[in-house]
Image (cartoon, rainbow, N blue to C red):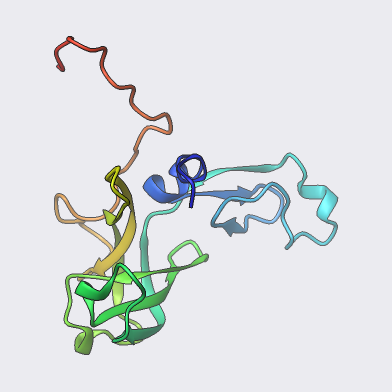
Length: 165
């Protein structure tokens, strides 16, 4: 993946930013510009609005990976799951902070922001969502789950020689 594409996808990766059709109320992730659920697709043109998924969901199906792809050998065994979010869209992601033997269909999870990988000698670090077990969807413990809001604009690097606040 090129850096340009990675940064274009920042709202989805960092905020679980999707889209909601104002005609039929269907939520999509990643966001779309036209709703395929509306009876007449033209009804939804210009009527999808940004929508922030809660990150809460449950495991629909999963697989325990024992033979990892290049770059993930140190993580085996790990769990990849399809998670149905509270709002409806299904996301694929790694389930972390739990023994793979403990993962079951129906496990309640919450998205969490984590390092995904480092790329090449330049050391570009890619972050995104993974899923961690959640005891319940109410009363989120501090520091768990996706932040309520992460700015959609990326912070700028301070000018050379200036101090960070």
